[in-house]
Length: 246
Image (tube, rainbow, N blue to C red):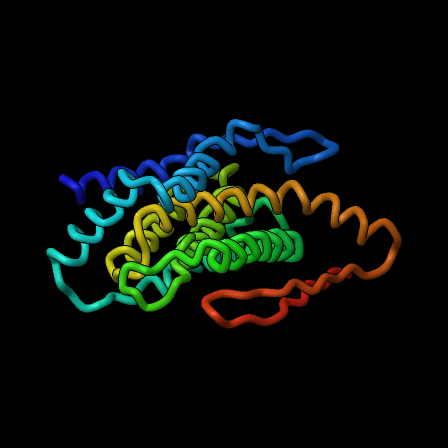
């Protein structure tokens, strides 16, 4: 029964892709309806409440009991690869001739900004909350960085291809939900970590689609080149991404 509850919760996150409908105008093609923020915001709030709420803490422990303790197994590290799969699909589909909403430069900016927003929130929150992981390996459990990155990729795929078919977004969300489940399957995260991470990932992309037109306007106001350097941090490794437009 508990495993069915887990699957239902993750499946509801996946289906939120089809519930988020974007609007557009000639002046701002990246406008998003306020209703699109309700589901991901609720998931983030749930995660924070679960840090202290006894009932939700108990639920986290019951999920761990069902997924890990009662079913001992070796960790399955597919989540290290599925985390970026939907974003890779965006570029792969374009190479295959299935054109998305934006060109290479624009979508790279959008994905880069999304990852920057998501990473900044995840890293700062992990260091602030210091939540102990289920396997007690460290105190960087909340929220799930893998899940956040996976849902960044899934929402990115959805927004780039929703004009062609909603199934692109649903497929991306299915992969992202699988990533979240595997984080619990591998005893690395609590249920609340995963749900909050999903919410962070979705909102980060929506923020990027709102921010990007302003950044693009600023950097392309004058004729010439436009470039941006974005810092990146994930799973205790980082670097810089250079995005260049000419």
